Structures are given as C-alpha cells and as structure tokens.
Amino acid sequence: MPLYRIHRLRESRRQQFRWAPHTSGASIVKAHDYEESATIEAATPYAAWLSLRGEESALHPGDILAAENGDLCIYKYVGFEEAKWFVPEPVPEPAVR
Image (cartoon, rainbow, N blue to C red; front, side, top):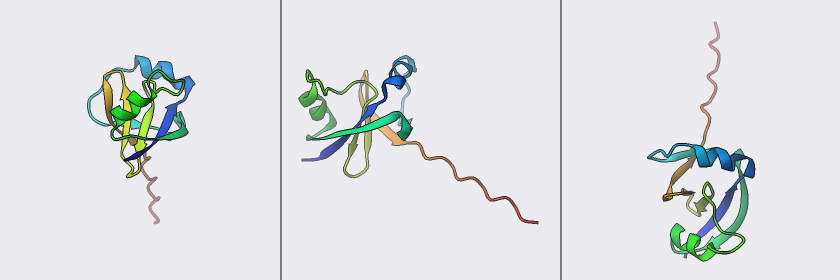
C-alpha cells in the first residue's frame, strides 16, 4: 500500500488559501508555506482522507499528501488535485565582455 507524507499548510496561510479563487490544472505550492507532518499508509489520497476524517489529525483544505514517488496532491474544497513544488528559475549569469 502506498505511503503518503502529510504536509500541513501553516496556519498563517489558511485564510489566504480559503479566499483564493479555484483554478484548474496543477497548483504550484511553496515549501516554506508547509510543515512536514506524519505519514499515512493508504490505497489512495481519498482513502487517507477518509481514515483521518473525524480525528484530531484530519486533513484540512490546503494540506498536501506527497506520495513516495514524488507526486503531490493538494486537498481542496472540491477534492484532491495535482500540485507541484515551486522551483525558482535560475538567475542568468551576467555576460562577460
């Protein structure tokens, strides 16, 4: 069964996530907005959500499940959607004259 690492959205970002417009496609997320938490074994992200539902450690909108293969899915109000970590573009080297 797959193992998922839970990344919790920092409390300071929850209201911003709540009021952000829903977008289609992969969400780009920044690692500094998240705190790494526990792991959970589940067949799918929805199975993980269901097993945690009603507990103190339940998933909240904005939380991310990271699969062992590196795939990320973010829990939104409409379910789980694909997510990707933000990777800044490299700074170009100045031209030498």
